Image (cartoon, rainbow, N blue to C red; front, side, top):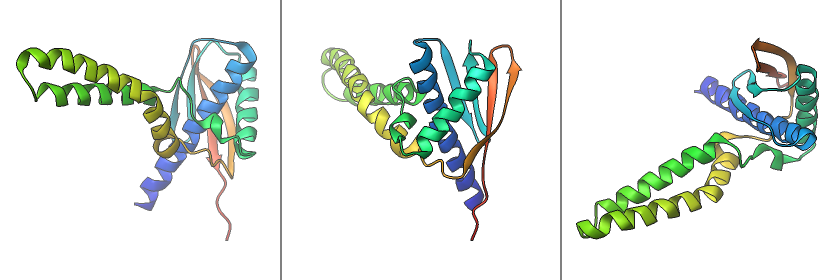
Length: 164
């Protein structure tokens, strides 16, 4: 179990670093199409970004998270928000569809689904803050960056072993 916990925590930290890196990139260059995916040993970024610029932005993002700028770990652009919206909308619609008169069910299900989508924004932030990201990047370092294929790049990280 400790091994699984360590792997999950590494993904959460790398997810935070991915978000922070994208935030730095967007602040420097404005809106652009990017997609990211965290892994246990770093994160992937897909987009038209110069490799040296990505490396610089990732280093800045790491430094800012390590300096306590934890708000960079949560992104309104995260896929977690989409997943939360889907779950809330489906759950709300399903709950309404199993109750009430048939004619009223569909209209009420539509309204319930819309309310689920509206609620998803703050709930998605909460899920990111407490479950899918961790801004605690103490001991984390960037150890490499490579182009995987085309515009897909991998930023590799590692966490220094704790000393007792």
